[in-house]
Amino acid sequence: MKTLSRTTVLAATALAVAALIPSAQAGTAEVGAEARAQAPRTVLDVRDLAQGEPPAIAWTERRSGRTVIHGPGGTRTPVPNNVVALAPMGSGYVVQTALNRPTTVRWVAADGTPGRREWRTGHGLAVSPLGEVVAFAGRAGKVWTIDQDGDRVFRFNPVPVTGTAHAVTVAGENCKEGEGDPGTGCSIAVNGPHRAFYTSSHGIVDRVPHLRQTTTGRGRWLGGITSLSDFGSCSAMMRSWRVKWRTCDNQLSDVAPDNDHVLGTPAYADGFGPKVLDILATADGTVARTFTYARNGHSATYFDEVWEDAEHVLVVTWQDDEWAVVRLGTDGSMEYAVAPRAGSMDTRAPFQLQDR
Image 1: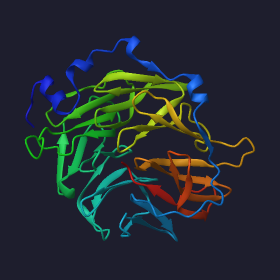
Image 2 (image 1 turned 120 degrees about the vertical axis):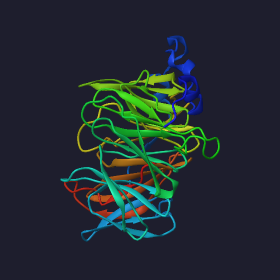
Image 3 (image 1 turned 60 degrees about the vertical axis):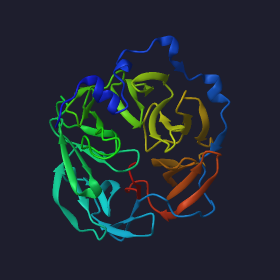
């Protein structure tokens, strides 16, 4: 791959080199407890909701020992039961399988036929904002991308980690320099066991500033964990490498398609699963809406929180021995996207949402 100057690389991938200088604390917002307390709240009680439209993104369903991917247009693609992550790519999907077997990535066609190659990887798929590139990482910091409708694979300079790496975000929709518009390639944020790095199609590898681990990103926005202990964690959101705000109330999850909001899960993860989900303003971290638990226990645990569009989040929920896919609105509305199915908390969820 062609190697350019650091200034050119970061400008091309919307990561300006000037932003590598840490921002002054005076310019960094801290999310206040008072503002958080005043945010509108909705109890995440998903019993007896109205049935809405099916998910507008891809999702898997496991039934009678078989798993299929439901596409937004009603297509059904058979895949192995041990699929743990998926992302649309061309006429098929990039899927990751695991569960008592080595974690492996491959492309599958719409009829379920596997592609010719597969890769041993760490958990997780990273997807570019428009879905044109899917990235994954593996042992010794190796990083790959699939683009061009699943027909092209690039291998990137590895990041300097011991053990297995995990791809988190992709900036750019085409990983070949000089091709397409603007033709500036792509970069991938990757987590090692102790540090976050990025590697680019220009051959540059470096640390992600300010963050110990990257947890989310879209375009110029990149968020992740700054500190972690037995009692919780603190996180920060950056724009073009500059810290815009910090919080010790949330870990940062999916960024909305219009970049206006980011999901905040609890800062401390424990037990069966989270019961509080915050919708935060990406610009300053203020809480726009909180979905919270009921003190009497009549509320759900959720998994797989993913933006469906700029105003709706899909979550896989479990409550009262039933699994469902629920659509949450930024206005506090709730409805079923996939109707409830009986199932124990001791079994794996029968539903899974695509990575975005």
